[in-house]
Amino acid sequence: MRDVGRVSLLYAGLSAKDRLRALASRQFGVVARRQLTHLGVCGSVIDNWVVAGDVHRIHRGVYAVGHTALSTEGELTAAVLLAGPDAMLSHGTAAWWLRLTNRRPAAIHVCTPRRCAPQPGIAVHGRRRLEREWHRGIPVAPVAEVLLGFAATERFDDLRYVLAQAEYHGLLDLDALNVTDRPGSAALRAALERHQPQLAHTRSEFERRLIRLCEAHGLPVPTFNAWIAGWLADAVWHHQRVVVELDGREGHAGWARIRADHARDLALRAAGWVVLRYTWEQLEGTPGDVAQDIGRALAAAISR
Image (cartoon, rainbow, N blue to C red; front, side):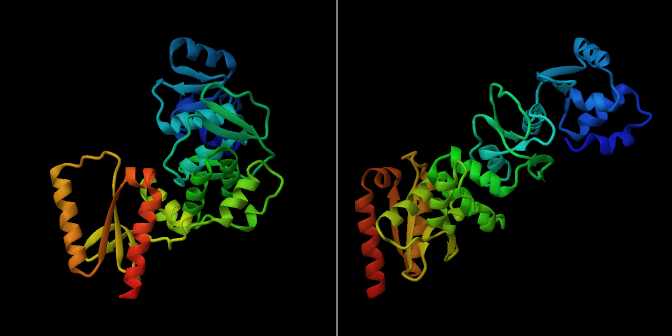
């Protein structure tokens, strides 16, 4: 996907088949017809390869070399190649590839300065020419553009989480996000106003739901996944010495898990911590009761 013209000299003297293999090895087993043409492989040779099964059509003008079982990298590369030169991953797909979220969108999102019709499973976004950035071998849009696209297409709570991850990884450039006239800009501004860095330290939707509960009821936001007295605690208010443990949606943990939870609670209480424990159903069904319970514990700790 890098400029084939820059590497064509590396293939000088190679047979057409060797040029095919060399290009595919750089692109996770996927090539574009236009790239092969640029490397001097004529269209009739490519057509013969298709008939012989040396290459397999994935999209129009995009082929897998010697196989049809694409890796994740191959699927993403094929989508970028479909969108043409200067295309790149964007929106939720780019956020996922940058590891700002663990949710991979159902469709692969790419943006391109060229006209390109979307395909099943591929969402194509027209965009002015952008300076591409490379991440794990695949071009992605600049982070500010990724965040703006994410804001336009994904849930607000997920956007807040992605912003926290971008800051945690040192990718959040507030000046670059000063955009006012693009789809997603209003949601992005709203998310920045409610920016919560602790979201980056959560490991589940359950923990993120606890943050939203604290915000909604005026409670201080805890630290997440912190080591206390030799144990990893879900949520911690250090100053008040209060710990909240969250029991997941499965409802019925195994006996070994129950024993470990009780051992942790006992050890934390022995170390002077107040330990509270809630289920998903409680946070979902009676959030006000949970908030009052946490509030009482925090207030009591301050008065001690």
